[in-house]
Length: 293
Image (tube, rainbow, N blue to C red; front, side, top):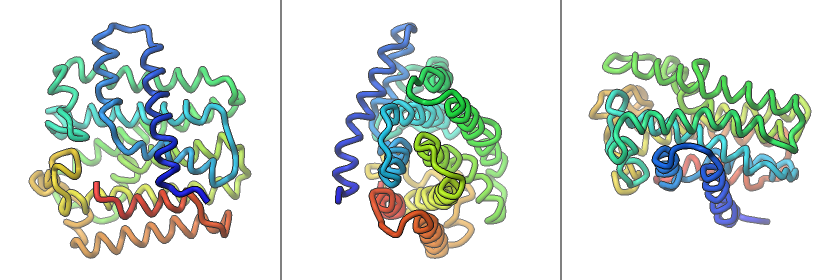
């Protein structure tokens, strides 16, 4: 059986090449393309496109445009990072071990680079050739929800409004379901759409996405305390310094780890509703909760 490590080593360069090809194909000012590509090419774990590809592997389905859809999701994720790092947002100097986009290109171009990545992604989905029209429409619709006011943008607003005041665990969960979980969940549901699975399998995968998305964010909160700036590729301890609401701040560090592990267990149980045979998707889920950077 293929291991997740070899799966990742095989697909990450293909994802990177897909991203590069798509940026090269854009007819836009050179400096804008350069700024867009700067953050895309900065590295990263490519977790979201890997989840889409791992879902297809789990379902034993091959799809010729899976990489294109995965690259689209990575563009939306990268746009969000560019904007999150801006002085008016998280005001961070480093991302993935490199200077943030606005530190290199200035705030105005960084904003526009993020805008360019976000808007291009919807056109990329509309141009898919092997996906039936109704499935393309569903992908576009669900991505707009995951990335927009009903998902990532709305979650970011809730996060900003919660700064320097205590929220409940339920309120924090709502923030992270939207801010972080929505796009990751979309990656998993997009795999289900490409595979054209039945409603029962799709529901199980949606539940998996919900729980693994929260486990992902809780681990991020834990790493902000336990990780170093060098390991994380961004400023460690920023959440504590900013007095942000995090799972460790509300539940203690050990309580946060228990909560992370519970969501991981629920995610795995969701997969067992589809198949008793663990695979790459299980390994990717385990990687999410055990990663150190």
